[in-house]
Image (cartoon, rainbow, N blue to C red; front, side, top):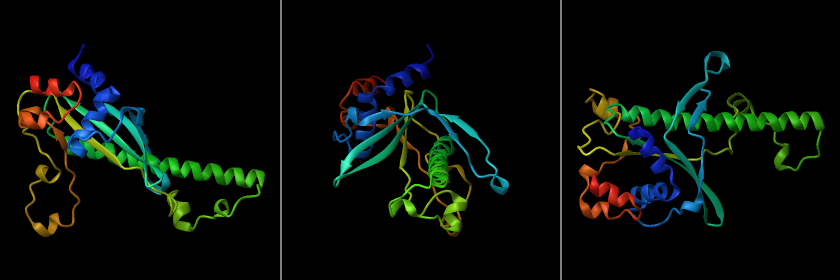
Length: 221
């Protein structure tokens, strides 16, 4: 069995997956519970906007992605967590992960547009008696984009886990991949950072913050 397949199956376990993000986001505090995670399809199909409204299907395969749902201030909040496992250093990881997150958001916009079109079609066909909330007619901008003013995206966070024994010497941001030093140019650009877990660059006391068998795996590496 290939190393990538083994690590993918390992990280797919909800307890391991929760441990990764509890470490990275909360410093090891057990905030994300395995039972709060729902598996997501790892094939990312999005429809970026082409010329004259034409759609161009793009498909990418993530290693593991799960939807996290938790009650916050009396309402359910969602976050999409994605894990990318690397047995070798990927020198364009910032672009790779940025693309995954961008495709996720593009897909959410398309899903919102499909939902609105479906509701508007049903309204027209059935001439339902609608509540005030459902009586809304989209303005031109909402109609053209398919995404209405009150629509909201679910945040997507991607963490890369490096299972190699050497130090990660690849770029850790988009800016690291560019040969640009002009601060005024950089100020006009959005950087994207690789969120990385690499055991060779972690002290033992840092690795001890993991609460699952991932702790022993990281120490062994």
